[in-house]
Structure formats: structure tokens, C-alpha cells
Amino acid sequence: MDNTLHGLSPEYLPMASLTVYTTLVEDDPVFDDDFSCQGSAACIGRNSGYIELVTNMHCTGLMDLAENGDLGFLGDGELEVKVFDMEVAFPTGRTAVVESFQLFFPYDLAVLRVEEEGLKECHDFVILDMLPNGVNSPPPGSPVLAVGSPLGLEGSVTSGIVSAYRDFESFFDGPGYGPYIQIDAAVSPGNSGGPLLCLHEGGYFLIGLNSWTLTNGSWFSGRTGQNLNFALDLRETLLRINENPAVYSANIRGVIEAMDEVFDVDAVEAGR
Image (cartoon, rainbow, N blue to C red; front, top):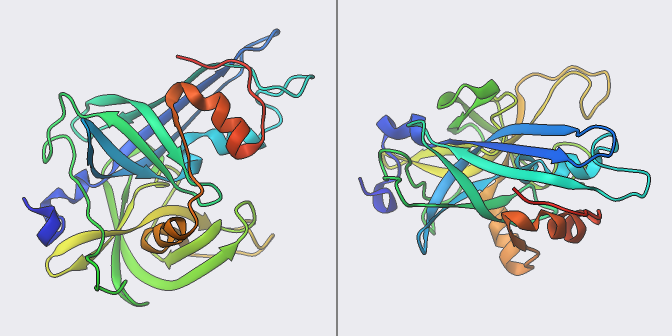
């Protein structure tokens, strides 16, 4: 299979998404609070013995941790974490620990790295390519596929169309900050971070990361919406990041620095 030239073949679509699990345990003097979340991710390449994945930053759990005053904040205002782990589950059932990550705040984008050893392309994972240079993003009305693990159901594929292209100015208000592709393909909790694909010359290419859905009571309080789903526009986001780099890199044990550097929250201790 030659993804670089031809995109992803249809028979590999269920393998286009991986599942990301995050676990955190707070070191509390009274009782240890724990927190876990699950999302999806897409493989975009290899680098020096590692597989590189893209996902939403909120799938790492760090955003929830920074916002949640009930989890992890003691009277001194410090966050005491004794366990922070991220793990990736592959379609074959294999798992790998996330060794390092990059956060691209305020964009809802993260790059994760896992060791490639023991994993085989086209068996455990497939590498997704973005649309070739010179090929325009699909216009509104074009068909798209969303792949992910909604409610933990790995390898789920749903279809829809591009409804519109949007740009949002706030990370915490509305669907998110930055450029988004509005779609009507069905997405659910657990789809976040999974690939949005379009068909080009017989192959499927990565155009976005399924990120948010607007339902009753969200964004416009008390109003009901249907099929209002949003995927981070990956091409446009990367163009903006390249123009104005704002990336924080750390190994998995660097969650303390990540919390302080990216979210302005102090952490005390972290590890596996």
C-alpha cells in the first residue's frame, strides 16, 4: 500500500483511528482522586523509531485538569499528581505507552509519540496523509468520513458532508479556538481526536480531527441543535502554527512543566 501517492484504501478505514487513554491520580492527604478520559487519534508518520500521532489536546486530559477545581487543587493552590499516564490502543489489541507529547495551545491539537518496536504498518496501524499540495480542501457539500472510538466502540466509521468552514476566537467558549470544518457526520464522546477524511482520486486523505459537537444546551444555552459537529481544520491549523510557532514539548513525566507552561497551573509531583 502506498499512502503517499494514493491515500488510504477503503479496506483500511477501520484502522484509520487509534484509541487514547489517559489516567491521572492525585496525591491527596485525605483520599486520592482519580481521573480518566478516552479519545481517538490518527497516525501521521514515523520519526527515529517512534510513531507520531495527532489528536485533540483535550484528549490528553490536561485541559480538564487545569479547569476542574474539584480535582487536584488543594488549599495551597497546588496540584499534586502522583500518576499521569497516556496509552494508545491499536486496532489489533496491542497497546503502547505514550513516551512524549507536544501541545499546540491555544489550538486543540497535540502530537503524541509511541515506540514503533513490535508494531507493523498495515497490521497494527496505517499512516494517513494530508491532501497533496495544490489540492484544495473539499468545498461545502462534499462527502467526508469520521473515524474514531465513540463511547469506546473502536474503528467506527460514519459519513456526512462538509457543512461549512468556521473560525472561532476563543478556546473555552463555543466549539474551540481556530479554524474548524463544520460537518454533519455523526460523532459522539470518544470520537474526539479521530481523523476526518475526504476522498481524492480513489484514496482517503486526512483533513481534520473530529473535536466538538453542539447539542441542546451547549454554546447557545437552551437551544437545540442537530448534526452540528466540528473537526479541527488540520491543514489551516498547521499553516498558522508554522507562521507563529507556539508549541510546548515534554516527555510524559513532564506533565508538571506542561501544566505550568501551557495552563499556568502549578503541579508538585508526577510520574508513572
